[in-house]
Every structure is written in structure tokens, then in C-alpha cells.
Image (cartoon, rainbow, N blue to C red; front, side, top):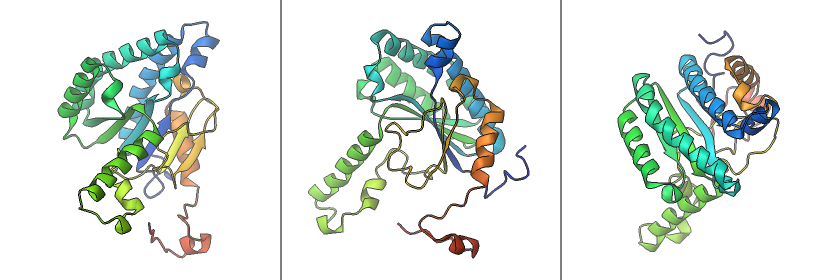
Length: 253
């Protein structure tokens, strides 16, 4: 059960995580990098369970970025094999636990077999409502904004939207996660303090929490430490602190 000061509205609705440190975790143990990725996959399972237990409805994990293709070919191949294996093994478990799985990102570069496994896992879990797990695979924030802008401009070209009426809202509605709340809290593990092209649009008013803990060591206690930090922050969304204290909760675009 959540701690006393981790109850709504202090609890975030949507947590996003940059899972960093798998390679360094393995290196420090004189293990191959893939061992760190395998352990990291186990922590994903633990993170999903923790968020479900805490009543957090949305969790978005940065699994593989558009820039990660630059890594050594053997590591990319091992990561894709691990992703394929997890889709086969975990989809049924997610379904049994009421978790909906969504994969966000550019699927055009993914192996057709992986795309089929994604479709099957998403179809199986589509109606689950306990927790929505979004895995960002071949995802980049700039790609997300560009594809959303193309979709919005298509409406202009089709004559369904006047150019002078075009606004940020028309881009926002075509982003990958347009149908769910934007992240309240971003956690990055591994000691780095940057967002690495992750959810660039959606993180505009997100609270950031950077942890020195490597992802394979990130556990329930580490998550609750991040949640305690979040619970004691004042979120103003452009307002003054006095307005927040006075109960002015209006947020305009």
C-alpha cells in the first residue's frame, strides 16, 4: 500500500523512465553487457508490479531510442533478440495481471517478426485497465514531433484545417501518447542528467528526478524515494506559488 504522503493528488498519474546503466552494471561485475540488459528486463517486471500496486495508471519506459542503432551491431542484435523474447514470454503475464501494453516509436526499421509480436501483444492486452505500460522502441522525441506535424499538415493540405488556424494543439493530438495524460514525473537512473531525445514535447511541465542508482539495481525502495521527492514539490504550470496555495488550479494551453 502507498505511504501516507503518497496518496492522491501527491501520487503521479504517469511516470516516465529513462532506464540507464545496464552496461555499466555488467561492466562492474565483469559480465557481458547483455547480462546487464537481461537484469534490466527483470527490473522492468518489478517496476510494472510496483506501479500497479501503488495505483499509478500509466508507465512509459524508454527501451530503445532512434540513436541506439549507433551501438555495436552485436549489441543491437542482442537487444532486439531480448525484446523478441520478452514479447513472447511477458505478454500473457501482463494480460493476466490486467496490464495493457503499448509500443510507441517508428516500427518501419523493426524486424517483421517483432512487429507481428507487437501487434499480437497489443491486441491481447488492449482492454486491460489496471496499468498501461508504454514501451518506447525505436523512439525519438524529434521523430514523434515530426510525424505529428506531418499528420497535422496533411489536414491543412486536404482543406480540413485553415493554415491560420493551425496551432500547437493540432500537433499535440497526433503525438504517440496523445490519448493519455502527459508524464507527471520523469525518472532517469544511472547518474546522467539529460533527457536524451525522450518525449520532448510531453515533458514540458514534467518534474525530473535523477538517480545515481544503475537501472539493474533500481528497486521498489528507490521508486518510493522518487515518489517522496515528487510528493513534496509544488507544481505551478506557469502560475505563481501564491496562486497554487490559494487553489487556482486552472491550466491553460
